[in-house]
Amino acid sequence: VLRDPTVELNDVDLMSISMSMVSGGLDTMVNTLAWTIGMLALRPAATHGPELRDLPVFDGSERPEHPDPLVLAVLDRRETLARRDEPSAILDAVVAAHIAVHIPMIVEREDGTSDVEGVLVAAVPSDRLDPPELDALRALAVLGALVTAHARLETALEERSDWLDRLAHTDALTGLANRRTLDRVLELEIARAARQATTLGVAIFGVDGLEQVTERDGAHAADDVLRRVAASLADTVRLVDTVARYGRSEFVVVAPGSTGLAMAQRAAGAIARIGADGTSPAVSVGVAVYPADGSAPGEMLGSAERALADARQRGGAIVAAT
Image 1: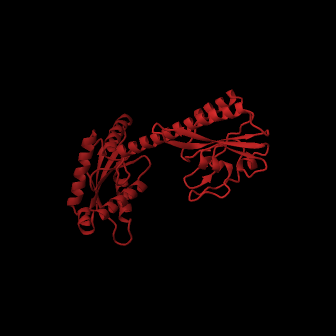
Image 2: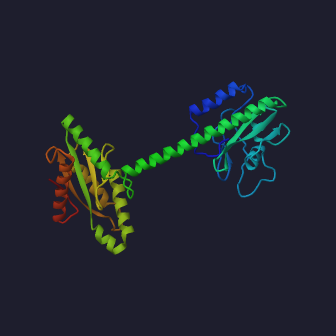
Image 3: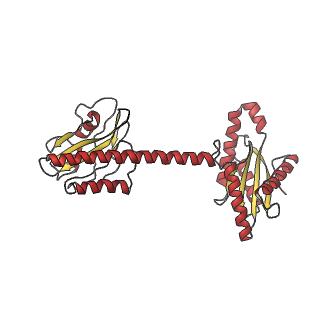
């Protein structure tokens, strides 16, 4: 019974527990059941053993009048025992069992506090549990608590690592690739185009009038425009293309194997149709093509920037190529 529903015990974790059960002589008498104790309710997550259908639900707002022995083990942090003639979700699920023992898996902290990581549940086919068997189960509960705590820590570290990775490679406002990622992708795609003797299109989309939106409606409105443009670009381009935030009001699309012109025209048209109430943002686009307009990331971006400046000088809301 696991307290944290986000913790997943991997094969190594389960193997270490299973080996301890076998070495302790418990392989024929113990059914290991994995449940989830949520913050507000007790619900089944998965089972290792018989499938459980009826499960006691514990709402943390008040103590149940007649709590299931499993819930009692969590609430009171003590071992509980259920017999066949007593209400028990475990015994209802495990027909062959006569008694069920519930041992809270507690981890003691260095500061003197403790956490209940879950409950070890043993469904026993006889009417009694010998002291050596109970001691083995208690030791197994300690192991289960440590393994679960370790798995929870690993999960937290992986989530933190994933978050830092996203933070390092994505733009916080739009969720697109950031400038650092763009530079790396462009470098790799130019190298690929050189090896395969193919073209590579680079288009810079500049949102026109963003300063006026900021002055008239505030920064939050301008941010909303940028998010809408970013979403439209991400939905319009091909899976092999990369969309990145380039500046305050600019985005870059890297299009392998393409001149980028048709893609830029299609994406600009999609952006113009974002809003049907006359609030659609206008974009100017500058397009550069490898190898004609450059053979390095800086050269390609510089050529696309000049094409973008030309598009804006010509009135904006158009696509221009070098």
